[in-house]
Image (cartoon, rainbow, N blue to C red):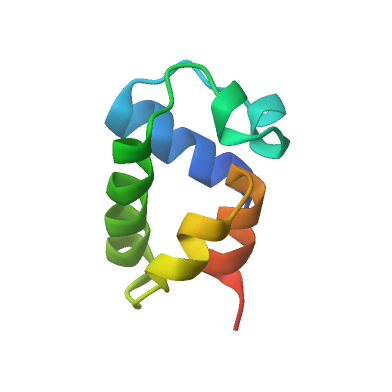
Amino acid sequence: MKSVDDLITLIQDELGLPITEADANVGFDQVPGWDSVHLLWLLTALERESGRRLSLAAILEAPSLQAVFDLTVAP
């Protein structure tokens, strides 16, 4: 995953949610169709895509999709 656009595409393709890059920096409560189950799905998908384990606690504390992306690509 090289950009937040890749994350948006993953969510669009796998969940069918009508989100755009503009939704990356808003709170999860403002992302169209988003619920807490989607965040758990996203964690699993990101671990699969990145090939590494991610911190559930950090993902749960992330305020936006951009923050989730940043956690995913952090060294």
